[in-house]
Image (cartoon, rainbow, N blue to C red; front, side, top):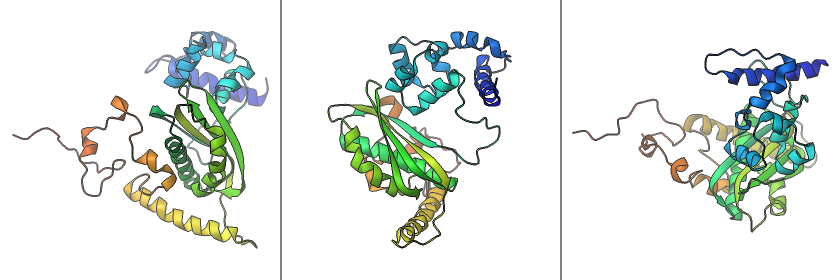
Length: 294
């Protein structure tokens, strides 16, 4: 077995064993016995597979991790986006990501995916949700002083079908304005007006260290430097007052409505009564009794 294969197997086995007898049990899994554990592992217990993806897998008769691993590559690519294809690769022993034992210092890709309810067929609402994901991904880019040259966007329909597009930038950037400039013209090729969507996602690829210092003949670097100065201020406001204190107009509809309706969109009473200087996302660590005082 190769070094990378060993490294991957250790990672997969560690993930499975750590969840097997939670919270206090210990599980030792010999490498040659891994398939026996995958047979017993319900697909909803596989890392990063949530309720919606579980429902789609079960709809196709896939109940266990081993059953998912034994599906064909073409089938997985047809029904699932890149993150779930990577999970399928790992379950089959393919090397996808290096094992990281410490805190992240950098990333090879950055992704943001959000479900929203109710599902919407409104083009502007769905685009606003995508724009919000792009903003969130760029916040993480800037935190780690990275820039991206390639973006993949995808939409997930109400029946869990994903459609995606991958695009390149003219140069590295960490600003949502630049990414939206590339994404906006292509969005209508992805969006089907008669379809209701429940989630949007973005994956930023080809990451490199952000640097906007060298001037060019066309002034683009000057523009990037100005954007860099602008977003330094935006990030300062975010750190002080909470995430999305300032946001782009493109994501306005995603910020003015709850992410989910019904019980999922219900806010705790504490969030309805904010103290001076608080926001819905950032509040002072002061307990507040909400009952009547008699």
